[in-house]
Image (cartoon, rainbow, N blue to C red; front, side, top):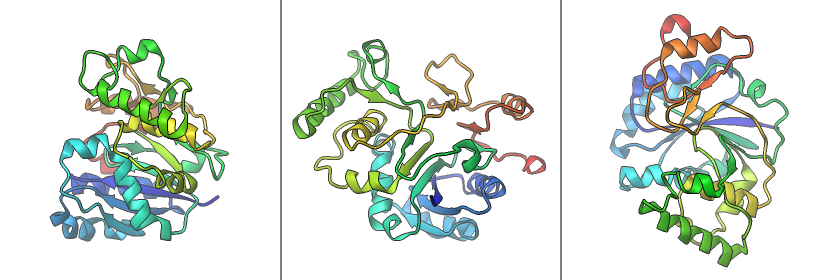
Length: 262
C-alpha cells in the first residue's frame, strides 16, 4: 500500500516549517502534500517557505469564516481530494495538522494498516452518557439541532439506524475509496465532522483500523492527543519520548520544537 501525508495548515509558517522538518526526519520515503486553509492571499508566502518540503501544494480558496472551517474541516479535505488529491499517486493519506508533533514513522505507528481501512482518532460509540455531556450533542447547546438533523438525514438518505459513532478529529488516515463515496453525498454540510465522518464510514462499509493514540475525552486529563486548545507541556512530551513504549504523537503544541531535539 502506498501511504502519503496530507499536511494541513493555515497559520504560523515558521512552526509549519519546523513540523515538516520533523515529519521528514521520521518519514523520509513518504510523499507530503500540502493543504493550505488560511488566507488565500498569503499562498505565495507559504509556498515559498514550505514548498521545498512538499511534493504538492494546494490552497483551499474560499471566503468561508473560521468557524465554518473548524466545523467543516472534512469538507476542506474533500475539496483537496476532488480538485487535486485524486490525480496524485497514493492509496491512503495521513492527515497531520500543523499543531501536531509526530516523533515516529507512520508505518511503525500504524503497522499493518490495509489499503481500504480508515483510522479516526478517539473513535467510539456516541452513547447516551456522552451525548448528554459532549459539546456538539448536549441538549443545553444549540449545536444539538445540527446533530439531530444529521441523524434524520442519515436515516432518510441511507436508512442508518445504528447507534451513532463519534471521534475527535485530531489525527486521521483516509483511504481513497472513502473520498470517492463521500463525494456522492447530496448534502455534506449537515452535521459536524466529529460524528458525521465516523457514521459515513459505517454507511460506506469502510473497515476500521484500531489504534489507541491516548486521546483525551475529559478536559482535566493529561493525554497525548487533545481536541481542546490547551498546549501540551514540553516536559510531558519529553517524558513520553524517554519511554521505549511511550506516546509518539502529540496535539496540540503551538511552538517550534527545539532544533537541538529535531
